[in-house]
Length: 301
Image 1: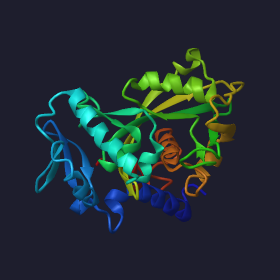
Image 2: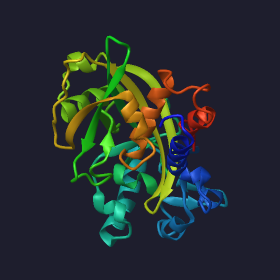
Image 3: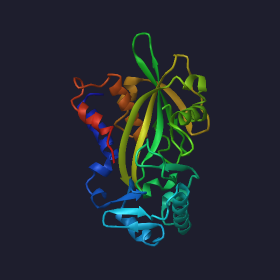
Image 4: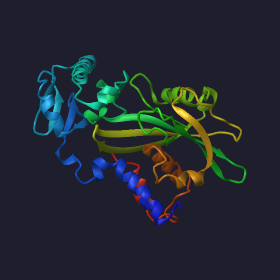
């Protein structure tokens, strides 16, 4: 039950896993080096990467505290091309499993979202350099006449490479180098749930969540832009590009109860938790771990 000790403990464990770079005993954080491009810190590199990087002295310079791209790589294109050549070499040599899932989709690399991109990186490789990636998630909800709220939830197909069969937000997707936040939202709404622009443009920005986890594939600082879309009772999303198996309309209380378990894709559970906090279903007087829950949704690298 939401607000119970077991529920809160489960959610805190989820937040701990999604911030394992900060919270997990044995994290590589104390021994990582900053990854810098053009004098700006844009990521973090694990010690296991250093012997490989030393094999490309024309691309990387390694100092006591940093891994930097060489100064002669001055332009956006020079940097992007040099790093892509390294990554393709690693892919051909079969050095990292993540590179076998090459997407041909580039993410922008910058210190802050408001900064001009310094270069692009293949999406499958962001964890190798601890580069922050960005995405957009949409909460689709219904407000009933009696004040109750329901939420549209999708179930990922079993063919998905990550978290197959898990529950997801109504719409979600990574923000590629070629698109802005709203452009990505509109694209994903159409592709995943067949939501036309005329409805999707009513989505309201509701802030962000941030977290950094570490696993065998690397370090993943991620920031998700969160949107809320109130839809009428007779609204029905439709399966689009095949990434979603089906959609459900469940009471918000039912959705919240599922957050601590393994039903949800973890960052999607965080987006629902954020919604519940922002809409007052969870607050300091009905959840003693309220402050920890809020803090766990906003952890920077």
